[in-house]
Image (cartoon, rainbow over all chains, first blue to last red; front, side, top):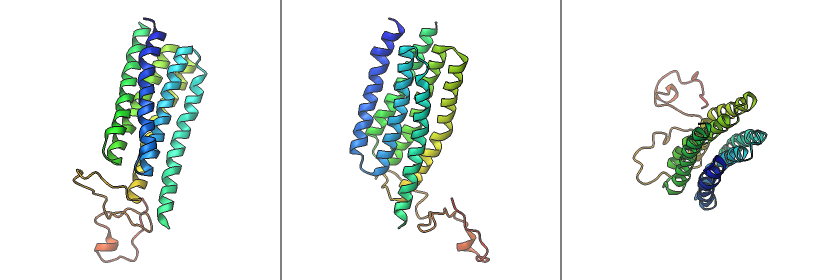
Length: 90
Length: 135
């Protein structure tokens, strides 16, 4: 079993199952804070999927997109929490 | 040999991410969900990036992967702290089995400052020149 077969048949399905589970929490989540951390976890799993895909195709350029996504996840969570506190204030 | 290292790293990372995803569905409470997801997702993504660094073996790619891991380790706890603080402000309920909420009543609702138990502004004299502590 080569590395590509292993990544395609074992690692990728586990990541896809994780995405489905987190998307369930993202759509269902009782409060808005649940949705925010579900979005954060979705972007983190997206970084993982991009990394596996970059190993799969031997293209190291995809890691740049992973860096951008990490930045967007952090800024999105911080902005959401900032405006949630602002909304509570008035 | 390299392939086996990459396979082990990817399998452990995928298992950790899967445990985080199951935890965010099954946990009964926002705070418990947060405590599961933040740590597990950081470890899983970091292990996947380490696997990519082993696979490529180039110094430019390795630097990029280590930079992403360092950025994740630096920013994820800050984001988790900020969203849990905001959730405590907007009144997200705790699970009914939780026994303790030490922050209850400690946050000032108007100034968003955290008051500790021995605040001289409430308890003792000399209350005029007490500094307002934000955070």
